Image (cartoon, rainbow, N blue to C red):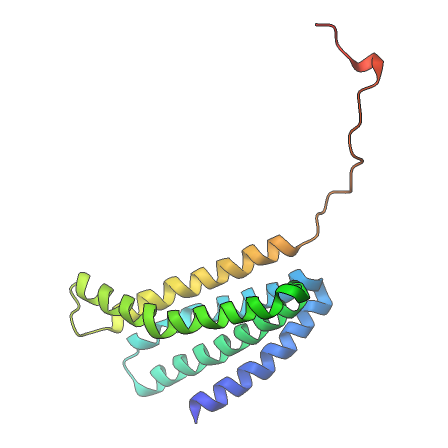
Length: 171
């Protein structure tokens, strides 16, 4: 029930926040909204360290809520930023990579970090570490994308032409 409710609220709130971000700042505003939601989700990656069921459920629910919001805003950003010819391929590639990371790389990485760091079967700290690193990487990715789509603040300069004869030096 928690997963379903958090996911539903996350998708709806992400859609509303994404629309607001796009109205406020265009494509960069849309990606800025995704970066904000991803940043809000980062501390929630500490859910495995909670000592009570209520704390665990609260952080996990918020992680799912913010993750769903960031995911829906990211998907909206694809439709706005990526040209038609590349949109289907790009969304397919992201979907495929998401599945590979979620079901292949992340669990293996958590187990590897647990073994290397001496935690053995206790994956609470390694799961938190991997979650924090990937959350920070997600925020950084949205910020880089935001920077890439932001229009230049410099005015368009004319293309340089040949120098006038008075500017040529005879050195």
